[in-house]
Length: 491
Image 1 (cartoon, rainbow, N blue to C red):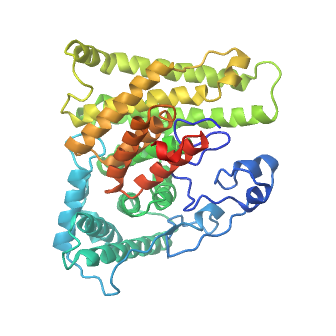
Image 2 (tube, rainbow, N blue to C red; image 1 turned 90 degrees about the horizontal axis):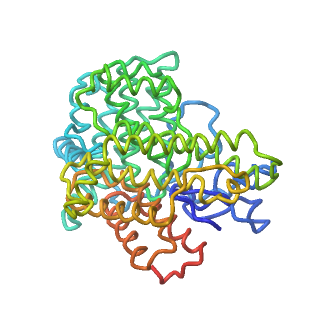
Image 3 (tube, rainbow, N blue to C red; image 1 turned 135 degrees about the vertical axis):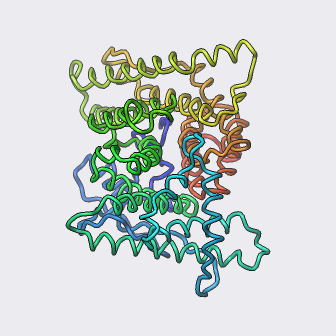
């Protein structure tokens, strides 16, 4: 089996967010002793056009999916979360304290490295302060942050955990009721509230759920669906532009983790995003990271196409060179050229100056620049991985593809690890931003030294102390290493 740069390949690797609390298989794969991708339908059942059925996992606390449609997909019906250990008592509401810890969460979790915090945007939207479900999502995050930062010796420590889940449930139920009342249309303020609420509830899940599936449901069925329903015109308002920028960062992380497509790659959305920085209200806040993220969104879209093409070729090899192969290869080369042009314009001079000073890759104190270089290293490897794990196909067709040699990949992995360690220790960048780069670097560490693999796991353990979802990335990596024959005690 070959290791993928992100989370899935053919046969699909157990990914960091593959949704299985235990790495179980669908009934057909289990009966046939086949490796199951964990998707719905899984790759094997989809290829053979068979029904794909999973045995339901035992449940504790059900997550209420924010998709208001009456016809939800089967994959959206069995997401569960472990019940927190907490006393059975009425939650003690302490608004002042929970709003304080919500601010603490924001200060500890910048999602762009820029000076403006997302709480600055929320506090300016007075009309949202009247919506209970929106306020409860803020309280829930604050209560959970208070729990994580508190001492177990404090009398209200366990109470904070219990209260956070109660508030979370109240926010979800309140939001669902609000959606049911607005079937015929939604005001701009309510749509903005929905987007922020689902974003905050997703953050709650990332802190508390070590499978990542709760966040995925909020992101796909809440934030992303709400944005798509609003249309690109949401970027024309100040409040809409702000939530769009926050959601966009989560969306790019989601698509890379899942090798999935995003509606944000559609031409009308790309134009709306570019307008924000050219003639929109955010032009003064533009940084090179913003244009890099626009390019990054296109890479998982290409990987999605490449994976489907290679799967089909494995089952039924083409004679000659298919048009799809030419188009995928040329698109890959065009993306590499776009990344190289971006690098030349925004990073090349800085890196040359550092090399002349014999500086480390982490000498900058600018958090946005640090995040930019981290994302650059990660997406550079990711684009190469779209082709070099299936190189036999592209070699057979004689097509040029944007792959890297081992030395270049090693250099980018070293940059990812160094920048991530530095950022965790000295920056306010959210550790959530480091998960997909670490997943990519970890996959490329399979044949590296034991010390390097141990280093990757130490970083993920540090992230997991703040965000439970780090355990999913760790488990996905160790599963991948085991599949490649790495001995368990060799990391």
